[in-house]
Image (cartoon, rainbow, N blue to C red; front, side, top):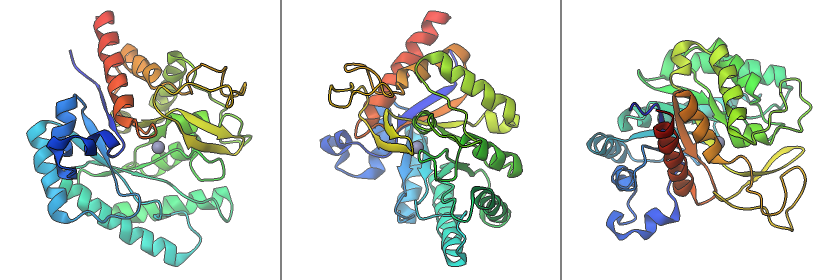
Length: 310
Ligand SMILES: [Zn+2]
């Protein structure tokens, strides 16, 4: 059986540091993934690309040894949509450094938040695209791609439409679709939002068919996803919940579900949709300090659904 979907955590959960064998040392990430049966890990450089080059090289060696892959989440302070020239300059430098480390680590995917909509959404989108085109032409190593991510906050740049526009204008970009984020944009009245909710496996198939229809084949083949159960307000994302966490009496709200229901979106629903379609995906669980459990639950659902349908 060909496994077209890969699963893994966003960074390192407490359980990694609690296991003696790995000596709290992140260079043992690949071995840990292999031991617990996961395929990928998203290295978090969200406060800046501070990983030492030797460590990045060790990541590549270990990834090859243990047959796993890495992606990288770029810094939150990398804001290519900014109206401020100094911010854009610093963002270029940070992203270039991240891309260099990605090449050393053998990580082919860098996830990036498109950033602010200050100065108006249309203008911000235009600036992001122009700056990204410049970056790709000058500073992107071979074999590395940038993945602008859908935003959880409605006021940030990154509705699904905006991400697809970026990928149309900058063909070497690919989308990072965060289903938690799309789910919590459901109350948004923006023209570029579609009010999607993710309550069952079929909802993901509709969304993926839309992606497939709107991307170049090489972009579609290298799709990247994030997922986590999420609490939100009309403005969007409020906080990530734990994998498998149930809605308490106190948190109950018709918008989220009944007390005792799981917080949405449910990662296993997405895994089932992937198994039913065979669509290509790298899927990163961003559940709050349970991203390893989230990824493992998805892989289990994926493999058992694939067996049932064969
Ligand atoms: Zn995300």
